[in-house]
Image (cartoon, rainbow, N blue to C red):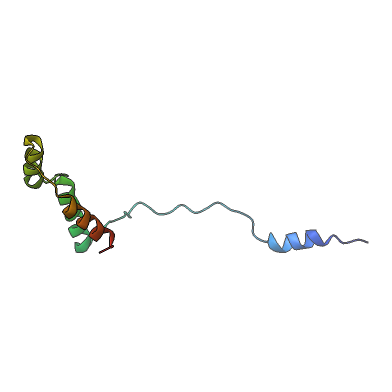
Length: 90
């Protein structure tokens, strides 16, 4: 008589049959979300940044007017020094 070992292994692992899942008692429960004070501060800061203008007109308008009038001058040496300083070469 030949015994099939795979059937025996399968019987060991299939001892429980899949049944119906029990329904959760959701009648008296609800989820709550609580935001910390730090989270509220972050939301306020994000809102302030979103409402701020992208361009600071008090700085750009005088430069824009000087360029338009032709009175804006840039020193080549000063520009090169600032460019090298920003690149970390000086």
